[in-house]
Length: 602
Image (cartoon, rainbow, N blue to C red; front, top):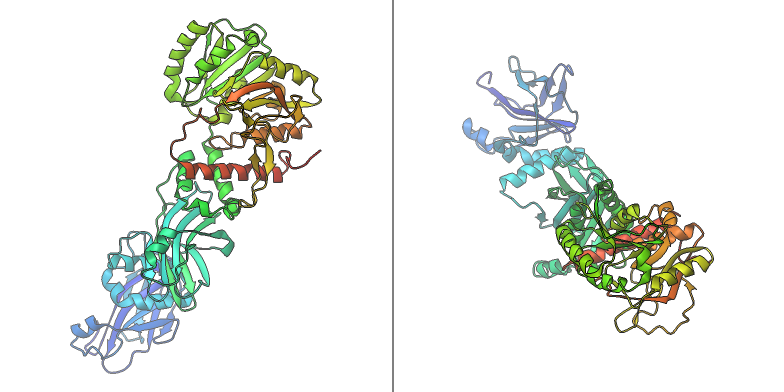
């Protein structure tokens, strides 16, 4: 304050994002104040005309009127200036009002941080004016800061919902940082003002990321529809959305969705979900997708938009190099085995006894390299314990291989093959049981007589002798456009076809015979698939791309209990989305020409 007729005060000068703000007030009882001038080492002077739109906004200051015993309607004594220039936070700015002599005030420029935004008393009289200037200059950083402070002052502790009576309501249920491969948003909305003109993700630092329409997919949310129908009319079942953005996200920053309408904006704050790594993150993402049964027509596009690529890169990242393994030989191994039989064990290991009870009466296994691969650290000790008793009972030589992690079906077989001693391989599930001796000889002899043999598969049957597997065929499902899925012709029916070998599009890896060299040439099973789907189709198409053929050999018959070797618990929705992710990945490899296309008939 400089004299009795003129008083002014600059309360704060702050920088946020790409702009600088000044909040203050001025009183001149003898004349109208017209200008505010800034001087600093950066610019000699910058003069703002009070009342000029886009430069400065006058604000009501009842607190100032009360302090100077002025009527509240005396005038708009306050002013808010927004300079769309990010000044150096270390400079000092000097402010003059109407160039009054001896009225200069010097203030340091304050850098607004995540923890220090605006003091509450400044926001109460300057927030509306700052918001108006921020909209005029389209300054997301300032808008974000004002939005944040408004939530703090109204004690809004919600992290996902926001509503505007004129615009509608929106919620973010999940926001996943996909290990810096992108961001996935799952939420719902109901707009009263029609569709927004644009949608952006705004970082607290101000950088906007525009969301294109094709990056957002409608999701059925009958639960939200039921909840909102008493509050709003016309709420659609597909009021949910799933949005994937291929962009890097800094988990240290705060984020909000900004919906811009013709007559206003709706902001929705969202925190990034707690960071998970590897398969835990993938499982959490897919479990969070609501009502997947309603997504059949769009799920391929959702994966293809980038979500599938992100999941793939997360999956590849957590795949560590092949672990060190241990092995124990039971009995004296054959000197020159003709076939290495590899059986992964996960969860259940009691099938070992049933298989060994059949192998002991089969002369083929007198010269076979039988390997059980324990792909489950929780059963390692139990497997070794029963292996000791099983060998004492059956006296049939075999090996047990184990390691300290779970690699999945593909990884377990790849480890087993790396230890194999024979030139040919028989990859076999633990729940596949021979019907009679000699089936391995049939596969070996047939392999040596067929033209261009790649992979051979036996006839697999259920316990009632109906077909479980007699070759697979690639199918297009109209309810799942884009996917190339595996069908099982004749499944559940009795097998009346010829017992002669027949060429097939695909074979299941529940039981297959092939050369070790071919397996290694194509790199074995692709470990990028999750849990255990499509690895066999992928291997078949990789072998076929080499110019070799796939054959069903019905003369070799085994029973298959089908998936009883797995214990997947109650995760059917998650399991379905994993299967569809694997199907998307498989199809994309075909599209890129990395493996053969089963639909192409030679």
